[in-house]
Length: 477
Image 1 (spheres, helix red, strand yellow):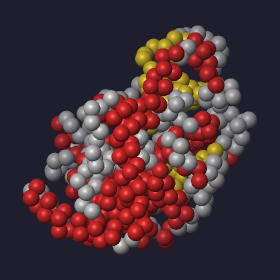
Image 2 (tube, one colour):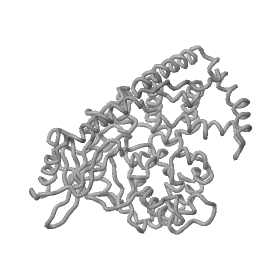
Image 3 (tube, helix red, strand yellow):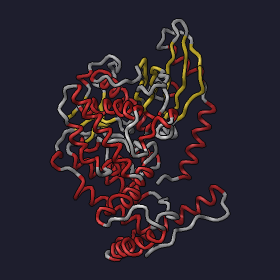
Image 4 (cartoon, helix red, strand yellow):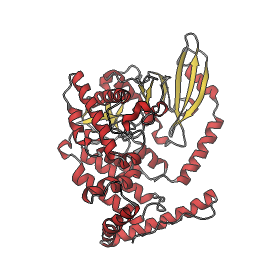
């Protein structure tokens, strides 16, 4: 879970930095990549979790560009240039090897020459709209997303375009796991030979960046510049990150999640992944390029008003991973993971429709049905949730209890509160108690994490000036 106190302090620092930012230097930097032509900011800046974007406009000829820089308090300094190089290399490679629409890069700099001592990328401004702005999953044209019935023409059109992105990315195979890098920082990323782009960086991810910001030392699992050779080794390192987060973070929301249940889920999620989920027949590959944030965030796709895909943006977390981790997005119902876990049958139906579009696209391009075949089992089970749990450890608790646990201990649909309480009393609590009581080490770890949580609740009370601290939820052991 995120440390909200650290996050709050980081956001305060971010806001102070943004307020003090001198836009003159930024516009001067943008002008240097347009023959010194003067530019002006034509719309308010937009801030994401890691970067801030400024929108500049030139005259004669009129042209609009985006100037994007990392937010110093939100991205570890050690990753500024690494993240930038990965994005530059990936965008160059994708633009050369596919027809996926992405912004054109006009200029860039690493931190040694960039504005404010930060790396920077200047790219096309794409006048597109995000799915949520188009009413994805909410308005009548998307009705088949949630309701049983024939697929709407809008939903079908959307699936066809999303399928094209996945099918093309699936063709990009590499011999190692990691992230793409430039052949040399002395050679322009805009004109370098794409054949010289290699997997030369570690598989940088949002979780690695956030753990680094919070001082959790994720580099022990993924040192800079180190690639990975097998799927098993990669998954082992992802699971190490999850253990690291559980061990070192203070806040695990124990006012909502029972402490012993958190440990139980973490332990059994790991064993499920290694013993049942991981496809060891593909241990040595194939390894394929993924966007890195498309599986969990729909805002990286931009469309016109007719639902035509006009750009896929934010490639900074792109990486090369085992093909098993190229999965359908969890937001196919128009919401996030928690909603899809509650409506798994509806989600699986969307996966079936997306897979059908993948199959059609593979056929149209004359390609073997590699991805559609790989995704066939995903039509009946929420495989994407496991991948999200590996990439975002804070999701493990929910993925385990709402999906994986129910494999061995099925739960009825549409139950009453009394039935839910009975299921917990007869099926869940006895297993949790037996798990904790089987090991003094587990009990000691649980008690330490409870002390950590109480310490956090007290610090939170002081930081936010609460009258009372939050309390640990009623414990089953």
